Structures are given as structure tokens and as C-alpha cells.
Image (cartoon, rainbow, N blue to C red; front, side, top):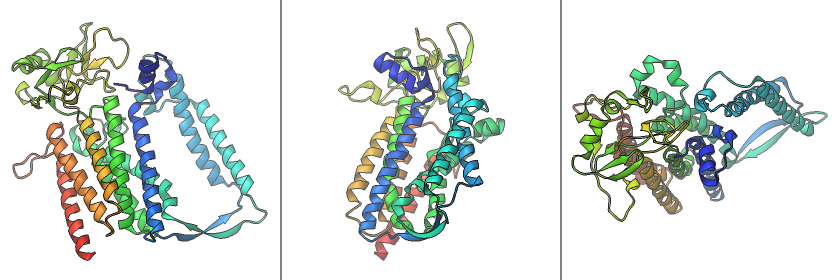
Length: 438
């Protein structure tokens, strides 16, 4: 696992650059997912514009105005926040004992760094406005095509996606949220994909309607972008080991921390008993005899520890079916012998590497959507297929994942399973209605 870029560069090139510690691999892949999604969305919108399915909108703007107080305040504020955190994190990265994730989400930072970047952004904005300044500002009518609004859409998706993901995660883990609301709201961990999807979708739909863009053609354009972005985001989960893994695979065990082998019939029970405090209390005893709380995944008894037994074909590597996530970013598990510093833990028992499966499924479903998009002309059909695809993918992956369950008519579904079923049903209804109308 590579919790941040520092460890990746160190492993690949045997070079240590402390400044790279501020670039967490999960964040890098999330950013990459937004970039790739924006490229795919822009490409699809341009295709629909050439077909005449999406039209531009004329808007009146005023050009030639000098910089005003609002421009100064906005650019100054944004510059200060980024400078305050980035410069502060860069300086803090030299301290081996500091947790940069906690630092970034704390109130700590560099005032000097904030002032420098704030001044720089104000200067750049001033120079830009000065170049465009006219002796007398004038109004102009411009045409704005839907693909010109991709930047706005991505920003809305980012802001409301993260907000929705945090809200749904805290709803799902209400007991944990009640204990410390502020810490859970601003914690860097704990994001629910469907929460982000729903909140971002509602916000973007409102924006699209206000801008006079056909909602169904926009939704059809977004669907493939969403699918590939999801797959890329899951790469970040796998590479960083962010805790988004599945239940234990009792067909395998680890003979030494971090190493996976096939298990005998009694190995799983032995592993549970050897690490009972981990599975029941989330605690482990380290080599110096100190007690560390390393996980919040706890069972009421060893018999209730979630697991399934599945042994993969012998010609495939074990890590496709069971993995212990050594050096995971959550620092979950037992200590790895000989490892020093941060991120020196690995799970005591292998789990299903569910992010790998979602990467593969997301990639395949994206290719299917991309292949059929030109063959389906009725608006809304691609969106309906996407809803069914994403619902089915998540519903089945939930069978080997650990999540909070609810009791409904004697059933015990997870939040994701409930939303998955609703998405599947919604997709089927949209498909039938749109197909009938077309």
C-alpha cells in the first residue's frame, strides 16, 4: 500500500522526498477521477451539440470593468486558505511524528504561506482585469454551449458530492456521529458514494434546468463519465488501503503479518482466537506491550465475525481473493515486524479486496455504456441503463462488505443495498417510460 506519494516514490526509486507526504494517494486518484470524468463529459456533450441535440444559450456579460472589491476578497480568501494549509502541511511534513491528514483538517497552518498565496492570486487577478480593461465598459452577448459549463458542473459535483457523502456516512453511523459530531463532520475519512451521487445529481439537475439545457441529454452524457470516475476512484481506495475492503475470506489466512496463504479448516478459528481483542474490541497489543485502538470494526462475539470462505483458482494470485492491506493508510491491524515509523500495520486476517472488483466492474460497465451510446437515440435510456448497472454492481458487492444494517420487515439490508434497489427500480421505470415514448 502507498498511503501517500512519499511512500510510492521511496519504493519505486528509493528516493525520500518529505514534501510528497502531503499528497495522499486516495486524493490523487479522486482528483484524477474528476479530470477524466470532465474529459469524457465534455467529449460527449460536443458530440450531442454537433447532432443538434444540445443548443447554446445567449447571455449578456459586461466586459472591460476594472478589478473590484469582490474580486479582491474572493481571490484573497481562496489564496489564503490554500496557502495557509499547503505551506503549513509542507513545513509540517518534516516532522516525522505528525499526522498530515489530521493537520490538514485541523485549524493549524502557515499564516505567512496564506498571505503569500493570497497576495499572488490578487495580483494575478488584477493583471488579468487590467489587460481586459476598457475606457468604457460595454455589454456583449455571447453564446455559451453546454460543454462550456463542464467546469461549473465539476465544481458543483465536487462540493455537493463530498457534502452528501459525509452526510450519508454520518446518517449510516449515527451512534458514532452523536459521540463527536464536529470530529466526524470534518474527519478526512468516512465517505458514502451514494450520498455523494444523490446530492450532486440533485444540485446539477437544478443547475442544468436553470441554464436551459435538456436534462435527459445531459444525464446521458454524464452517465459514462460517472462510471469511469467511480472505477478510478476505487483505484485510490485499493492503493491507499482506506478501509473500504470486504469481509474476511476464511479460505485464506496469514502465516506472518502481511503474507497470505491458503488456510486449513481450523486456521480461521485459530486466527480469531489469537487476535480476539482485535476482532471484539478493536485493540491490539504492540511489541512494547502497549495497547493500541486500531479499528472500529468490532463483532459482539467471535462467532459473529463476518466472513465467507472462497478459494480462487490456483493459477491466479491469492491477493485477488484475500489481502491483508499492509501499510494501509488507516493504520488498521497488527504491527509488521521490522517496520518503523507510520503506516506499519497489516490486517491480522485477509479480507476480500472489494475495491479491485469494483475497479474491474466499473471499467467494464463504462466500456459497455461507451459502446452503446451512439446506438441509442432516445434521451434518458443511457441514464436508465446506468442506474441499473450501478445499482446491480453495488448491490452484489455489498454481499461481501461490512456495513451498518437496518431491520425492515424482518430483513437486514445495508444503506447501500436499499439505495441500490431504489436505483435499479428507478432505472427500469425510466427505461420503460422512455422506450414507450420514443
